[in-house]
Image 1 (cartoon, helix red, strand yellow):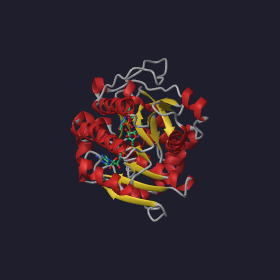
Image 2: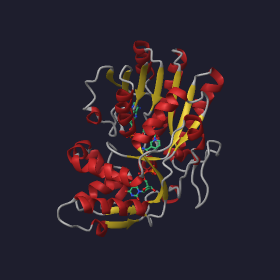
Image 3: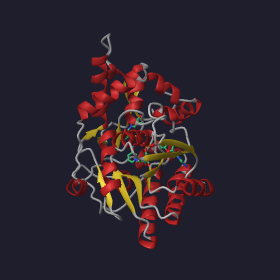
Length: 345
Ligand code: NAD
Ligand code: TYD
């Protein structure tokens, strides 16, 4: 198998490449990544010299670069992780989200069509469905009602994908997963922000009252699901991938504080650092996500295997052991971003 992974230097992509190199050691994997602020080759340092792995730097929205890549590699399958992925950044400036997430996906689809790839997996998100109240769960047939520019750009990409399946028969599958967590997540998302700030004795900024609900999925479970979908998912279909693990944000932050307190030598109350801040997302902040994953479960026999307690412990331990990684991926740009979202806290 010659597999092209785009965005493989990011959080989920790097975990997926590690998973594939372990479970399919005979595959050839090419990682095509622009290396934006969120992409880091450090994420793949332990596997970069593996047989069958190579890296090409490039932009999925750059037609010429993508044409050259497909002409050189002639991939049999593509898994498209490449994206601008953070809601708060999309609210500050949506431009890069439109360029990468929509145009970039179309550029890849066009190349996939020209080179007749056998499989195209589009990595999408539960955020395309918009928000839920206290009850219910999204199925693959729920309407797409995105509420922020990130979600809108991912929903648009899903529709472009659908059209390339219908109009040109590009053999694609779309996955929509819930909130992933685990090693190598860039410190702008909830868990790594909280862990880093706690270790630095800084405020733990909870948006609004922290009552929003997310469904948490350990990244390795997602990688297992994606591997199955890549090999066995039905062409033209959408698969939800969720952790069956809904928690309010404040519960997650409290759990992280508890785990950290059990890990450090001197007893410290990290919970004292929790600070409720004015919600930077305002009306664009989705209240609740929940996914009905019965399709994936019944067709591909998948269910999550890492429960929240174990997953959070593994995650906290990884960040404790890799504080240098955290500081190495943070640049001056991150400080500016932090200033804008958290208002100088
Ligand atoms: P991430 O921000 O950690 O990584 C994105 C990667 O894409 C980076 O390596 C970046 O350099 C690369 N990239 C960005 N623009 C590019 C471009 N124009 N060309 C080539 N590479 C480019 O994101 P992530 O959290 O790993 O998410 C990966 C995918 O999964 C995204 O498509 C995202 O929408 C989706 N997703 C993420 C989550 C989550 O909880 N993190 C949940 C559901 C879906
Ligand atoms: P995030 O990790 O950005 O993922 P998403 O927006 O894709 O769900 O945020 C998860 C939840 O945590 C979301 O409801 C916003 C909230 N949040 C905070 O309260 N404080 C923070 O510093 C961050 C980054 C997120």
